[in-house]
Amino acid sequence: DHVASDQIQGVELVMQHLLAQGHRRIGHVTGVGGPARRRREAYQAFMEARGEPARCAGLDNPTNEEGGYLGTVELLRRHPGITAIFAANDTMALGARAALREVGREVPRDAALVGYDNSQLARSRFLDLTTVDNHGFDVGVAAGQALLQRMSAPDPPPQDILIPSSLVVRSSSGPA
Image (tube, rainbow, N blue to C red):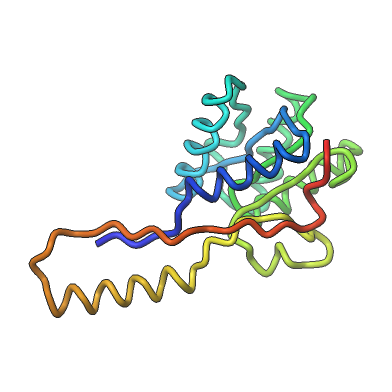
């Protein structure tokens, strides 16, 4: 059995929110690892479906603050006209904010910033970060229930269980 939060839905929530705010030149700061890869693929598919170029940076970076900083530096160098950044996670968003500030761009006035995971960091007064809540507790409960069910009835085919994500809007994602 496979139990996880719906990463594709989470990315679509981010992108729809940024589009509703008037952003069209949306960049993505990513890194190595499974969740970052899935979120990058969902971002790329979303942009492609709208005929927009995907603007990704940081593919080989770690998914930490430094990776977010370096990815944003790369993104801004390659695509200086972006108006919004979607970071692969909240920690990377912290690094993205530092890189934006270094070049004189304030969040949200000059660029919207969105993360993923709804971590304690996202809730900090400094970041006040719009982010995706992947409902990790609910994923854990569903995984426990699937395990108990599998132990009592091991023969049914494996199931894929996706827990819906939700968008938590905070002040970091203002209008374009």
